[in-house]
Amino acid sequence: MQELVIDTISDANKFGQTNNWKFQMAVSGIKRKAILARLPIISSLVPRSYLTYVGKNLPVNGLFAHGGGPIHPGGTIEEDKCCLHPLQLDPDDPDFIAKTSGGLNMISDNEFEPAYPDKIIGNFTAANRFLTNVSRDFLGATIDRKIIPQKNNKQRVEAYLRSVVECDKLDRKIILEQTATFAFRSSKNPKEWYEPITDSIHGIMFFEWGVQGQIFNGIILGGTGKYAGASGEFRRERLLAPNFAGAETFRIIFPGLPRPDYWPE
Image (cartoon, rainbow, N blue to C red; front, side, top):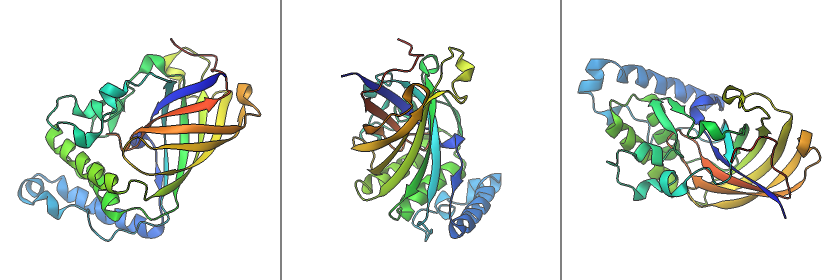
């Protein structure tokens, strides 16, 4: 039986987050700390622990997150090179960031280049709804990593690993609902991979949080173009979460569905 297998690398830096009112107020406080952290004298004299939100009483219920990123043919992501468990790697490895980003190349703190630009076959967008409370320590560590400026790669890696340690504690303890649309391009123009495309697959899934290796099923809600009327189950395997871009890297298998028109070898 034919099956459609795709790899995706989500980049949270490019997608907005929607949260409840209490959380938005907490974010305002975080932003004030971030401004202080960017002042040279504060950054030099005040310990970073005074600026952190890890362990603070952040409101965590009612969290929504929007994400997405490029789609590649299944097998594009080299798991043995760029989807390795962060806590099992040497943090001083010069390739640490790429290995924990699904291969994404970091340009700056909030900017990553696609790992495989020549093999992008489309894009996906997703809305995540947390059905159980998120750990405030995980949320705080993740926010610290994004908000508080890091002076060098060593600090970037240390901040990232704090969020991974907290994420690892949540294995199988947090449940999310995700609705996603996978849109496939028909053009070979590398600048058009993000444009709306005729052929798309819509799906919904419930899955448990963790760093790596979780496998879960989803339901196809339908599609457009070549995938109009598509239905049935699909399977998603988490290759890495969180990746260094603050989201996930994963592989999805759609049984019984054909490849899109554009499929680079």
